[in-house]
Image (cartoon, rainbow, N blue to C red; front, side, top):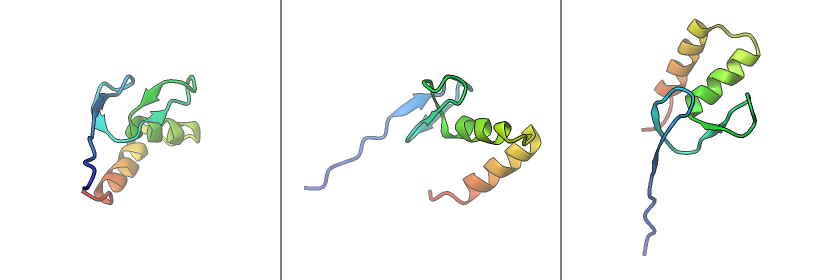
Length: 67
């Protein structure tokens, strides 16, 4: 018998958006679980990438993720 995977929705404590899947660990405190997008933004921000370019990078990521 095939085991069904239950996908739980979570609310990101940083942006408030609902997400599914594996959370990212915030770079701010090393403890808080945040959505993958906020995790990516924190990583990009840490290397000096501005918000507009972060938006473009996330758009590319989302467009290339499997449905």
